[in-house]
Image (tube, rainbow, N blue to C red; front, side, top):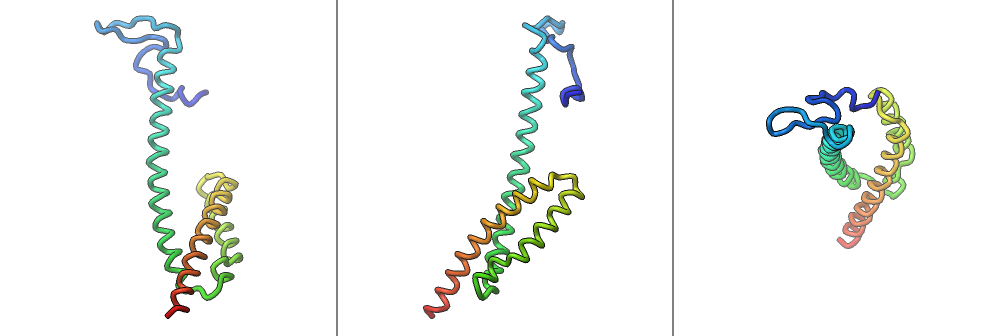
Length: 135
C-alpha cells in the first residue's frame, strides 16, 4: 500500500473532468496519479517549511539562553561541559524513542546543534572576559 492509496479520489484514476462535467480519458493512466502525487508532495513540503520555521524560532530562543549562560561560566571548560553534553544527549535520545522519532537522527542533530552553540558560547565567553579585563 502506498501513501497515495489513503488519499481520497474524486475522479477515476487516469481520468480528467471535461468542461461539461463528463469524464474523459487522460493521456495515460498516470495523469491523476502524478497530479495527486505533486499536490501531496507540495503539501508535505509546505508542512516541512512550517516546522522548519518553528525549529528556527526555537533555536533563536535556545541561543538567547546560551548567551545568558555564558555570563555564569568562568572557564572554557565550563562552557564545553562534556558531562552536561552527554546528559543532554541521553535525555533527548530517550525522548525521541518515547515520541517515536529516530534516535540516531536525534542524536546527530543534537550533537551538531550543541557543537554550534558551544562555539557561539565560547565566542560570547571570550568577549565577556575581554571586556572585563579592559575595565
